[in-house]
Amino acid sequence: MFRDLVDDFDDEFTQPDMLLDVPFVPTDKRVIREMLRLAGVGRKDLVYDLGSGEGDIVIAAARDHGARAIGIEIDPLRIADAMEYAADAYVEHRVDFIEGNLFDADFHDATVVTLYLLESINLQLRPRLLDELKPGTRVVSHAFHMGDWQPDNTRELCGVTLYKWVVPAKVAGTWVWEGVDGNIYQVELEQKFQQVSGKAWINDNAATLENATLRGGTLELQIGVPSTGLAEAFTLTFSRNTLDTIEHEV
Image (tube, rainbow, N blue to C red):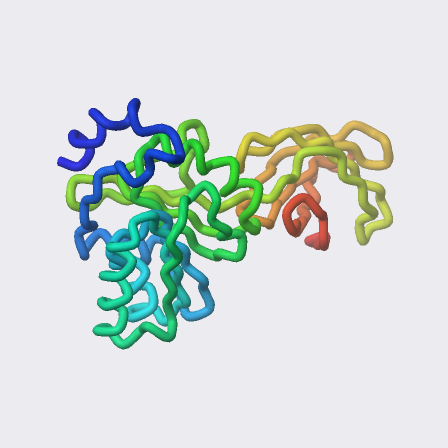
């Protein structure tokens, strides 16, 4: 029903100053539970719910998963209700609600971001999610996707689709390192979100990049050695676009 409702609004409400007019539809409690489960929310997480309404997701994250949680909401009346509900649930010490526009809000320190917005709003937020959040941050959206940023996981529940993405590190470029075998390895990588491809060399000799799997800040590579027909496996760890560590599996 919500999908039918917002289809009529989606083309019209695309500007940041129109966010107050996005239809407010409460999220089913079963969907909230599954969103937080899909995100893998735990006690060490800091959850931001963008467009938090009356605070149901924020309160559930704190009450049921022990997380710290913050809601960003443009409507002060809904924030007042959310603060009252948080007190009733005895989690006011673990939650906060911030009045503001999603496009101006600071949520860079989130480990989990939850969304129940229009597709057009998701797409406008997408650059910030990719650029400002730490690699490995989980993003879960109720009903609406992120265009050509393909989800890492989906769930079907109560007639809607839940989408999960893991924010990827920026790994595109040239990387050179020395393996434990003394060989010099080089890769030139291209990237589209979490999809990675490229070329590889060993001691300046062409090799094959047999596999490149990126999840969050961890990039697993398999480089084929032409002389042996075997593959060398590496795990590269990134923070944003900086290479931190390399492990050579032998």
